[in-house]
Image (cartoon, rainbow, N blue to C red):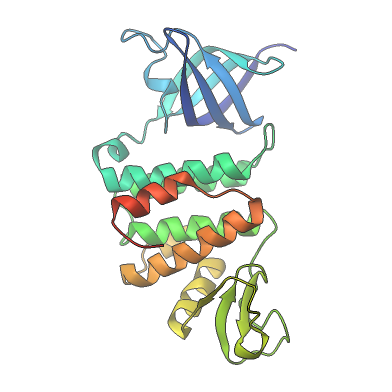
Length: 251
């Protein structure tokens, strides 16, 4: 197979040998791939800026059985401002971690890549009235794309549309008090939070970024969605745990 040319964002990096790195890249044409970038840990490497985490770059690489071999890389967007704000960097890292955990090698989604880039742009350029809303929106859009859209309009047990007091992780959505099962993990949920979750489903991120809403409510939604995503894909996010620890919040 010949050279592959595609745009992609670096979602993970790992040192390799003395001066190389193994990169996990979410690409437009090839999905999630792993590549070796040789010599990029040298301070004067021409590929240094284009092969860092968060870098969205034009890439040229030879595919391999396990790792591709990057030949060229041209930086399109660095999202550099994320690196100057620990809170924004932690939130952005969580979005990258969600991509890494949710997609298999060579599984692609240009739509989710576009969504990721928009969300990182809103975070890095202070385009959102509340950064947490951007993250919650990404969580909801991603889990819905993966085929696990939660039920928010009727009880997932009996289908009645009143007394929807809990979000059932195993039940994939809202349930009423009568259908709550003792062996399921459930979150008590208030009407305001239910309305916010419905908004995350209904509106595009470009509208949600203008939403003014209390951090406490958004964090509750984020906690539910992270738990739900972890249940659906079978893997929890270490980056989300780091963010919660950093903010001294309790899961």
